[in-house]
Length: 261
Image 1 (cartoon, one colour):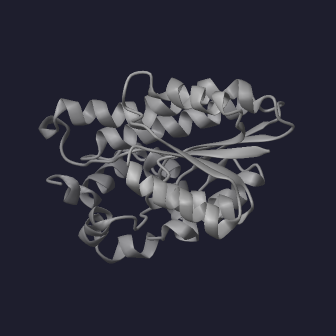
Image 2 (spheres, rainbow, N blue to C red; image 1 turned 135 degrees about the vertical axis):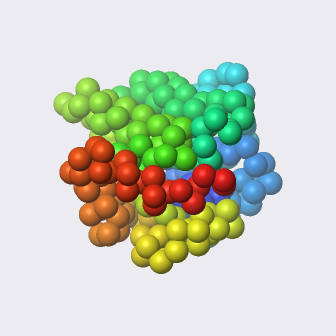
């Protein structure tokens, strides 16, 4: 029996990914720091989807947390053939106005945790005939956004790291994908950010279940870069075509709304 392990699995895209995988009859291992929410999702998946569902409540920011997840998996003899690095956090504002603890939190959760989880579970993934790694980046991964400098920097790292190890593992049994969604309506804070951008943001907006459906299907096909939505895909490509000076001036004007958020 094999399992799909998902971090940040009780809300937003992570929760949607858990249900999408379970709907495809994948057994799931769910990780989150929100014990009550996680238990509800875990129990509901087990009851409604007819698959094995187990969960571990742990704060992945704590020292040794990723090792704790790995030991929980090995001690219970869970065989993981899909690793989904979903957990992450975003915060905007001018770099100088941000608190250092918030900067460190974002960098550690978005990057350090992902790297450690991938490192710990790579040997386990190598044991399977076919295995997958899916990591959550962003449409903004190729856009160094003013007023979101740390967030877009961390998502660029996820993007670059995923493509690099995809090449390293090119001739192995493991397929590596990176998910780059645009605006996704996951919580009230996300809704306020989408409203701040007006109509152009709503054109790009998607819902978590849409993103999850596209992501899992593309991952299983071995697609390296997954950008849900036609308009999002066009926007993503434009990020690498426009001259740097022009691109940065446009981005500063577009994302000035994040200056005080």
